[in-house]
Image (cartoon, rainbow, N blue to C red; front, side, top):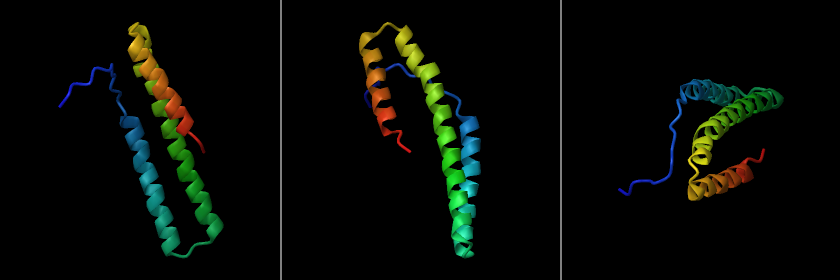
Length: 98
């Protein structure tokens, strides 16, 4: 296995994991609502709540990435690594459509 030469800072994502467990519970609740033939607007409201929770988790991880991995790359003065992070961010933000 080839060693990755890029600079990485591995974050503690335990808070996000706990939040994901709550989202998992929300999704299971949505499945139960569907099984129970609940009123469509109620189901949609719960889907939107789960989406909002996922979006919040995504924002938290992006912030950690910027404050950790990206900051480390920029401070390293490694031009290639800085360019890699910039390209990575452009791709990530291009994918962050609602």
